[in-house]
Image (cartoon, rainbow, N blue to C red):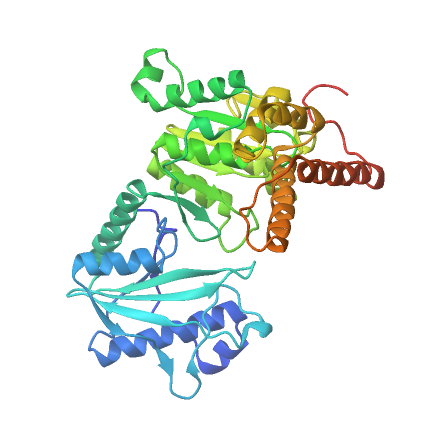
Length: 429
């Protein structure tokens, strides 16, 4: 049993004077724990031991409610309130400016246990869930903990969502395919082959005495589909996918939490967007490297990362296979890719010859700039349609030219006004 996830909470509360002198975090916990104890006392369960489930991976209000329904539990109390002060704010770390926040809390009752789920605010201001569980004895507490843990693992493995650490989960778009990517064909096929080889499973890797783990890093200027590439990987992999939205430290280090969760779900895909920003701060790089290639087993983990600034990433990551085994550059689209993307955007509006011309005129544009050229031209067409009393909108070549010229000026202006960073690449400049 992981004792950082299962903690027996002491029933001994401090005297009033000691509690008032305690740090805000501790004081708030005493207040909440005291309310739960009072609730248990009203139900002749005051002597029951109480455990805190701090790190049951993926345990949140929604999954806790689904577990209660599946197990046949009942809602016992919509909130626990102090008659003198009303419902108390519940936080990981208490700050004076948070006094006005009063999140709700809820108690569920089972035949042999009570579960108290409540919200808290972490260092970054994000809200999460915490759970206290009471049962007649420690053995039953442990059994309930194990039951909740197994339930969370099962539901995460079966999930059709990208599981976001630091934000709400999002549905995996299973309609996305490799054809949705505008990339040079050799690059697309190389990424696809490496993914599909990993998905063939541990036995294949074991047969060649290879560690069953892989690391992919996508690097290059922004706006060229690195995030879309990760979404396609998630859609095609059909294994649990975790995404870290922030590496800002809170009560528990989110990078550590993400690796712990992924190891339990393996085979599992992990995504770290903007890796260079996640590793900022003292000790962050060393900690990440230890998680990536340290003593803990990462069997079954596919670690995927993106960066707009590979020059900001330490060579210990860039040039060390077994951390990120493959590093692919996702550059601004070349002429064939620009032509293919513009063909999709302007289908039904421009002729083949006009599309060829536009592809030539947009040299140096990222995919994001190509899309903006379409949006600008489409808006111009809509304005013209409004003046023509609702005639069907059609994008003309002149509107496209105007959009391209506007964006070209924006690109050239940015190049003049902002000092260029180091070149995007992995060799010497």
